[in-house]
Image (tube, one colour):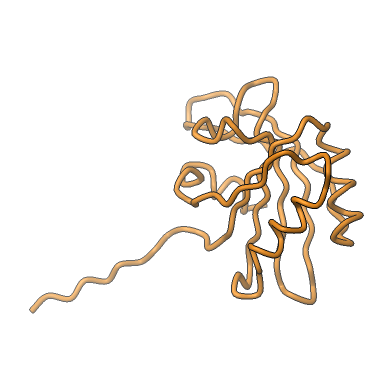
Length: 139
């Protein structure tokens, strides 16, 4: 009898897609205000393949010390194109990572829908992030 060890080499995270016509800093400000977070802006450089030129996307990060969760708000659109082409209907992606059992995606989505400037809030499967997840989470 053979035993096979299958090691998952991916991050455990939850993803939410957002559609709105706000600038990235304005959406981050509204989310900070609504959730009492402190999202801090940086630039995310992502290569879709080793030989390609990087895409630069606005990215905001916040670590919640109480729940041991990290939140990342990423602009899906930049001058260079889409971060994740399969998710072209979303302007922004909100990712939660860490002690994922502490994250209530339904409650978060409900709260995001209460921000009047946000037109669409939808849960996203993790599969489209496979090529870029290490570049997003490894900072």
